[in-house]
Image (cartoon, one colour):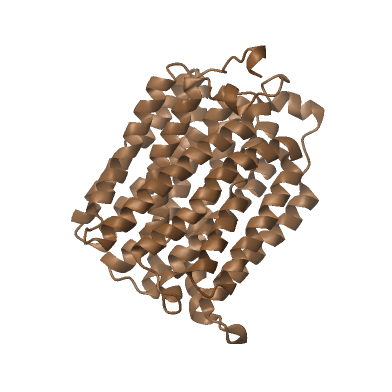
Length: 413
C-alpha cells in the first residue's frame, strides 16, 4: 500500500541523516592526521552539532507546521546535505565546528518531518509499526557508515585531496539525490485517506506555552533528555572506544563496527511491533506503550558489563543488546507525541522532545570528554549511561499515569 512506501522513503532519509552524523566519529583517526583533535575537542564538536540540532528540532517542528511535510522535508534535507559536504573543506577546528553547527541546523528538522508524515498517513494502531520502519533508518545509516567510510578512506584519493574529505562530499551528495526523489514522489494523502489516517479532528493552533502547561509533556521531554544522553554517547563515542580501548584498525572498524547498529535496527522494528501487537490483542494504548517501553529499558543496564568483557566479541555482543534496547525505546518515545496531541501540535511537541534529547547528549558527551582527558577510563561513563533508561521509564510512569490525548482549553491555544 502507498502509505508503507511513504514509510520506506522517510526511513531512507533518516538513514542518510545517521550516515551523515557518523562521518566524523568513524573518520576521526584520518582527520586527526591533518587536524589535531583531543577528547574534549571531539566532545565540543559533538556538542556543536547537538546544540543546533536540538534547537532546530524545535524550530524545525515550527517550520514543518507551516510549510507542510513535503516542502519542509525538502528544505531540511538540502540544507543538511550541503552542510555535511562542507566538512570536506575544513582546514581546522573552527571550520569543522561551523560545519557541525550547520549540520545540526539541517538535521533538526528530520524527525519532526518524519513524525508528521507518519501522522498524516497512518491510523493510531499502525503508527508504532510505521515509526519502527522509519526509525530503522537510523540503524541502516549507522550500519552502512563503518564499511562505506572505510572504503572511501582506503580507496578514494581523487584530485589529490585527503580521502577523509571525500567521505563528506559523497555522503552529502546522497542527500541531494534523495531530496530530488522526495520532491518527485511525495504528496499529502487525499482527504479520504487522511480522514482515516489521522485520528484527531482539526483544532486551533496550540502554542509551545500551552504544551508546557502539561506535566505529560515535561515527562516525555525529561525522559528523552535522559535516554538520549546515553544514545548520543554510544553513537558518537563507540568508534573511538573501539579505537582506543581495543585498538581497532580501519579493517576491523569496517568489518565489525556495524554489528551493534544492525542490532539497533532490529530493535526499531521489535519495539514498535510489540506495541502494535499488544494493541491488536486488546490492550489499551497506555498499557501497550508502557509494557514495550519497560521491556526496552530493562535491556540497557547490561552495558555496564562492557569494561569487564573478556573479548571484543563480548564487547560487541553487549553493545548490541544495548543498541537493540535503545532503538526499541526510541521508536516508542517518538510515537508518544502522536498519542498525546493533535496533528496541529505534533511538530512543536516533537521539537520539544528532540531538544530535550539533544541537550542530554551535550551534557553526557561533555562529561565523557572531560573524564577521558583527565585520566579516567570509559567505566564511569558506561555506568551512568547504563542507568539512564530506567530513570527515564520511571519519569514516564510518574508524569503520564494514563496515556491519552491531552485536553487544551480555548484560552491556552
